Every structure is written in structure tokens, then in C-alpha cells.
Length: 331
Length: 298
Image (cartoon, rainbow over all chains, first blue to last red; front, side):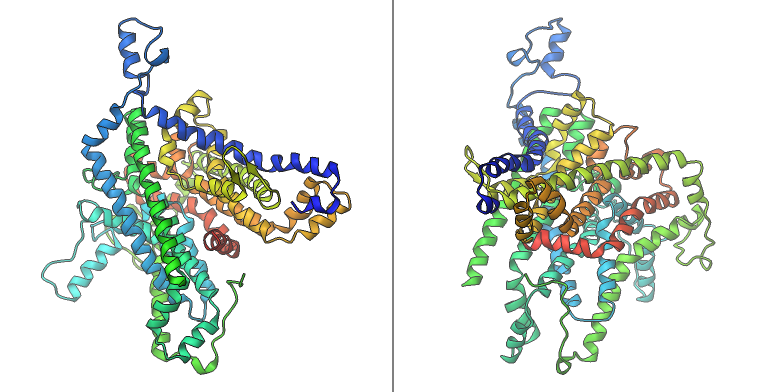
């Protein structure tokens, strides 16, 4: 926009009109081809009986020896709302939805609270702060598959193998408890999701911390100075100054992490595979299994749209609430 | 914008009492322990005999157990072909998609920062377009499973490098555009303008003047793209079946093919995380800056 003003020549204007398309097009083309189109296409698939190796109706027709003009407009599949009816009675789906919501809610809560606590601590000047910052980056750089395997070693209930179980046993000996403390991490319906939440938290608390810390460090010191002069204590300063100022950043990181946890699959595949039963199965894992293990393309797409709707609800509630609260704080 | 790395020195009068310092160091040390101990455990486990793994836990090498290099020798010896192939696959997929994401992201970021767009039919201006692009990043990947499998089968992209690179580029572009647009917005326009007065074309101004100046942003985008593609699991699992399998899929599959050989898995895991850890340690400041640029201004 600015360069036109300098020369104002027609050739520049024409060049810019071309160049602005050249600059933006590759990104837009790729996103349309690989994101928008698949998104719309899978909505279409969710209303068909498509399966791996041909739809139900196409297979029936083949058995009867009909090859031409099968299904909707002769395209070899049938249009149907059955996939969406099936959602209602699928109890395994209901438990995966519940698990996913639990992962998102508790995952975000644990990570935000602990991340904020650590950021508050790290905001104090101390020796070796830069080293600590580097150490903090390490978990979030590694592949979740690796974190999950390591977590599996730690949450093993066998005290001969796992340092954590060993520690708990030593602890109960020292405290002379009657029973040895032992947690059936991956075999118990209640504990298995906790183990997965903890693995994810180990990996992503540092992310929360680093971003909240950067936010805290951009708060000018004189605000704190003024509050201290007015006699505010540490807690009041945190509640009345730090937290409100960090509110927009907090909303952003919680939104980012929440949306990421909606995608969780790798940690679950490596640790429990969705079990015991389907106690740890996430929506993404269930969709993957419906699509690739069972080959139910239509049904998998319908579930994927349920996930998309959940994600959209989460994001919009968050953005709306965030905006309102931010407004009330400013006043 | 205030510099987030600015050091704030406390005046001497407000130094904290000793117990607060003690608490501070305690918390920091405990958390560093929680972060670092799993890495330590991976390293020691990769050096243990199977019996030392199952009859333990053994903590300290030479005291609790005698470290052996066997599993590393196995990995780079008899398993050499498999290790190298998967490592190379990861490298090609990650490097290829990084290169594309950086180029395409920088171009679109520059466009959105310097030109005025208006998509008449949708009534979208630059901000709408940028928001639309970043929102693609947050779509659940599960929704792409079925269409990608069908599409990739159709075009013979299953189990190919091109297929992985394309998919990862698509996932990386939104973030790349977002960061680069932000970066270019902070770059003064005068230099380009004077170059153009001197007769440089738009492209020359972008290529010769703007890109060299935005090296920190490009590095941040490159790091994030590389790490994302290097670590990705779901699409690698879905879109490969033999030739193009990447490290995360190889590791996750150890479970089924060989039983749980923790010692070998640990060695393999360390090999898979080593590159990103090295990148992280060397380029820490770019990462922190990129993270905060993405989150704080977003």
C-alpha cells in the first residue's frame, strides 16, 4: 500500500497488483486443497454409507451382479442419515466424548495452575535463571510418543521396575504404613486417565510457564512499586495486578492448550491403547479406529464432525467469555 | 513493545529474606529434577542389561549396575538398516516440509503485511484472511483422516515422502504465516521503499532486503515447523506403511513387534529426541521469542 505512494507510476501499480497475488496464492491454494476441500468433503462422506472397499449398497449390487448406476446418481454409494442416528446409541462414543472433555478440562486446569505457579517463582531474579529456562524447553520439544514411553516406565506399578513405584514403597516403609502405597496406574479405570493427564502435563507445563513468564516480565516494575507503597501484600499484588494484566495471555495459552488436548492420541496409543475397556480412549483415537481399523469412512466422518463441533463450541465460548471478562476488568 | 528479555534488577533495599530464597531454589530444583530425571532414566535404561531393568530399580551406573553398550551397538549394528532408514525418513519429511513452510509462510506473511487484500465475495480484508489462515491450525486433525486416506490413495501418495511433506506443510503454514506477518509488521518499510525508488522490483526488495532482515523470524518458523513434523505421529501412522515410516511411528510400534524391550526402546527414543533437543539448546532464544510472539500478540 505504501509503495504506490512513492512513485505512483502505472507500471508499479500493475506490478503490485500481480505481486500481491503471487505472494499470498501458494498458501491459500494449499489450504484450500488440503484443508477446506477435505473439510467439506468429509461432511459429504458423513452422509454416505462409504466404507473401505466399497459402500454397503455397492457390495450388495455387486453380489447381485449389477455394476452400472448403483446408489446415489450412480456414484456407487447411498445418501443416508444413518451415521448420525448411530451416534445416539453408541455408548463407546459417549465414553470417548466424556474422556476427551475430561482431558481438556483437567489438563488445561492442571497445566495452567502449575504453570502460573512456576512462572511466578521464575519471575524472581536468581542465579542460573537462563539455564533453567533452557531446561524447561526440553520436555515440550520431544515427540509425545517418547514422553509416553517414558511415562509408561514411571507409572509401571512394579516396584522392581519403576522408580515411582519404588519411591512409594520406600515412602510407606519410612512412614510405617500398614499397606504399601501402590497405584495401579494403567490398569485401573480411575487412575489410567490420571496417568495420561500427568504425562501430558509434564510435557506442557513448561510451555505455559515460559509464556506466562514472558508476560510477567513485560509488566513494568513501577506498577508493583506503586502497589507496595500503598501497602499491598504479595497475595493482593498477585490477585489485583499480575492476574488481571496476564488475563489476555492466559486466555490465549489456555485456548491453545485446550485445542491441542482435543487432538490427543499418541500418548494414549503408547500407554493404554484406549483401555482398560475404553476408559482412556479419546475421540481422535476412536475416529482413527473407526476409519482405519474398521474402515467405516462414513461413520468416522460423522464422529469427526461431532469433534469439530465440540472444538468450535470450546473456542467460541472461550473467546466470548474472555472478551467479556477482559472488558469488565478494564472498567 | 517492551523487551521480554529485559533484566529487572531489584533495588538493594527490597532484597528478599533468606527463607524466600530457600523456597525459590527448592521449587526450582524440584521442578528441574522432575523435568530432567526421565531423561536420565532413559539414558541409564539404554545402558542396562535386561535383568537390571526388571530387577531394580537400579539408579546409578557402576554402583547399582554395570552399564553395557550392547543396545546401542545393536541399534547401529544389526538394526542399523532400520534405524537409519527411519531416521532418514523423519529427516526428509521434516526438512522438506520446513523448507516449504518457511518459503510459503514468508511470502504470505509478507503479502498480508504489505498489501491490502479484499476478497469481495466474502467481504474479507487482511485481518479476516489472517484469522482464517490461523484458524486452520486449530482444526482437529481427526477430521482429515478419512479425506486424506481417500485422496492419498487416489493420487498414489500413500507411503511417499511427497505425501508426508505435503501434509506437514499444510499443518505448518498457518503458524508460519502468523509469525511472519507479525514479524514483517514490526519491520520498518523505509528500506524497501528506498530500494524500490532505486529501481528494485517488489520481488527483489523482498528477496534482497526484507528476507535477510527477518532471519530471526525465519529461524523461529523453521524450528517450529521442523519440530512439529519431526514429532508428528497420527498422520505418519496413517499415511505410511513401510518405506516412509518415521521415527515416532517406529517407536510406538516397538510395543507390538518385539515385546517391550525397554532398554532398546530407550536407546531408540534417545536417538529420536536427540536432534530436537540439540536444536532446542542451540537456538533457545529463537524458540522463546517465537512462542511469545505467537501467543502474546495473538
